[in-house]
Image 1 (cartoon, rainbow over the protein chains, first blue to last red):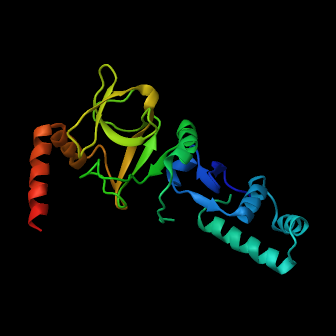
Image 2: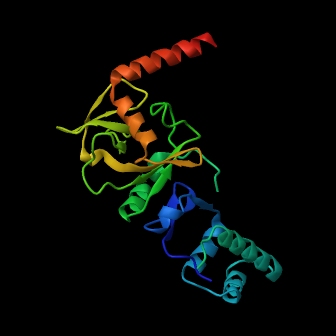
Length: 87
Length: 149
């Protein structure tokens, strides 16, 4: 799984937002706000990562159980797919 | 993803410029009444892009004044610096130069529908609105109509 080209994460004030640049911004002209866990997942996904690797990373970095991590990832990935942000 | 939130433009300044510099477009929902009757707050929006050249008469420009205020107004004159004026105004603003300009409107959305900037409707509107006499008449009629309510 990988975030499509042309989307960048920026810190604006206190908020994490994703905006489209270049060609991508012609078809996608909203702004996505991410909370801190959204930011974490976004950063991982930007480099390209498998669902299994992402799960492993979350379990290493956060104090959460596997099923919570799985459902968090699934929810986030579903949102990204819905918005057409995944390759 | 159509939820609108009021943004502090100053915080977005850098990001907007970055998007425009990348050859991209940035959509904003203008606030206020200065571009009425064309742009209604909370309803209409515009796409900004970076102009490849100096602005032309009739372009709608997004710029930042020296006092830090962000404005979306129309270019009335281009000789010796820009002269700007909102469509809902009669007073001209002098002293705007290229360095103040952030972007130019490349698309207008009236509600969800795109208004073609090359289409007859928009071109006719621009032609009418060039005339400050017509603006005056329109403002007068509008205030009469609102006064009667």
